[in-house]
Every structure is written in structure tokens, then in C-alpha cells.
Amino acid sequence: MAKKTTCPISRTDFRQRAKPVSVTINNIPLQADVKEFSTGSLGWYLNGKATIDVGGTPVSVQIGLNLTIVGSKELPSDEISNGHPASSHVVAG
Image (tube, rainbow, N blue to C red; front, side, top):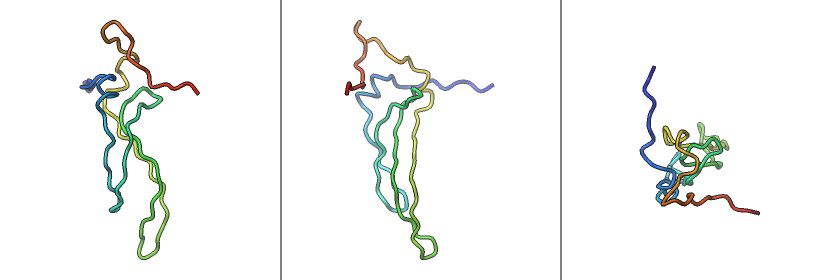
């Protein structure tokens, strides 16, 4: 059985330091935003639409892209820093 990958970053470090990622698809510059997925994984997410030429015919495409940090799902959900729970990104509405 393959050895499980350990995530090299903490949730707190990710929340504080992760920046959007630039992605280019068919010469179209896009931005994948920082995301904490419902599964608990950390990474980046991009969703959108674009037009791609297929033999002279423009076709509309749906773009869905997840960049997931390997091993991040196994990180503790709430880390303790200096005796206080890490801040949450949940906003009451």
C-alpha cells in the first residue's frame, strides 16, 4: 500500500497566506480563488464559461477546475493557536 502524503501546511497558514492562482485556458487568463472545500480539503476553485474555436465554429464550454492540496483533508478541522481556537471563515447571514 502506498504511503499517505502528509500536508506540508497548516489550515491557519493556508488561510493567512494562500493567494489566488492564475490559470490560462486557450489563451484566456482566469483566476482560481482560494477555497476550503466542504470535504475539508484546501485548495483553489475556478468556475466559468469560455468560447473555444473548433474548426472555425465557436463552441461554448463550461469550465470547472479544482486544485486540491494533497493530504489537506486529513488536517485537523480547527487548530488551536496560543490556547485560542483559530478564526473561522463562517459568516452569519
